[in-house]
Length: 464
Ligand code: BG6
Image (cartoon, rainbow, N blue to C red; front, side, top):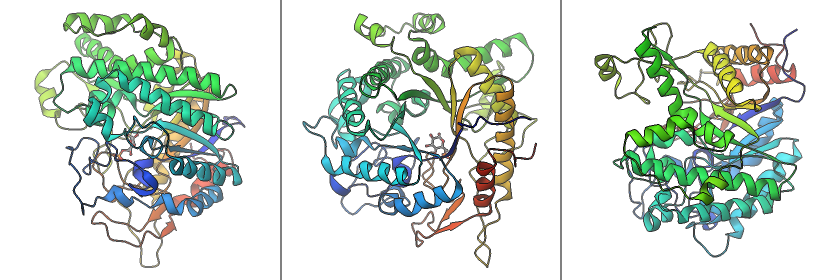
């Protein structure tokens, strides 16, 4: 019988800036997320006294985490992905000493998880960095930021080494190509050469964090985190097929460096062909040799690639400029739903890296309706997750080593792309709305009991 391994991590995934709120509490500094109130692709807005934004309170996880973790435990989670807000630890990024109140918050959070036997999976940087590092240093464009990040990583490894054994470096590290402010703290009109230089610094910092983790938490494991942007050729025309190879390399490049320890030849050619003279020292090349223990990724959709410029023009404007697949349905937000694509992606990653894989984000963003009796019948979410988990299990049958599955947003949270609350992912509903109204009360959706059953049966209750 097809099954998930007994050691499988089941749980959910969150990010500090999308759940915590308390954006200036206990000494926290402003982050890039705090100055992007309209989402990760949005413009930077300098904060003025009295300004408010949805993320400032988010879902108030900072104060309500014990109750939320109890609900996750009720669903049977044995893993929860959270991120540490760098700005709670080093409010400006270059501070002489870490902020004790920020460190103490995550101590309490990890202790609470331990009480419920929930293993923390911790992202060092999820779509945010200290805003002061952007203003005063030019973000990741400045090599000095590597050192600031390494110090932050070493500080949290030392502090939490007894409590946290599973780490991730940068969330969706390949997103910098589409959202440079969010990824590397560069303005959106930066040149490709500037963005790649900043990405290079971040890749070096990621590798240094891997090295530090291996030194400080020797029994721990650290992975990278990719946006698994699997692309299909729109047709079997050789031009479309070759362009698809190149598009896929656009994100695989990050995994290639982080898992294989060096820049792939196709990327060096891309830099040569475009006349980019990246500054890459021998020390950088040496640092990159510290490779990740496992590969983690998010998966929401696939897209198509065509060499036909007219068709490409039409597709411009959607999130990753990809051409829609005529064989797939879309979510309310236009994300094309493709469960089999997850099996393909798992196989592609396994064949390429031969390292354990971890699905650290997957889920359906949808509008939920609260019925008169308070119930929320989110069958669409159940069906989305069921179908993806069935394909994950098929991939395990194919021989893929899969560590776990943390669904995105197990509790409703502020969405990343547009900073909305109406786009909900949770098994747990949060009474808060796009206009900021709501009591923040939590309630269980139909999917809550469904996921609980999936976990309790280690996937046997899934409908193939
Ligand atoms: C991933 C991010 O891109 O997708 C998350 O790592 C994000 O932070 C998730 O929330 C879903 O995207 P959105 O825009 O629907 O929140």
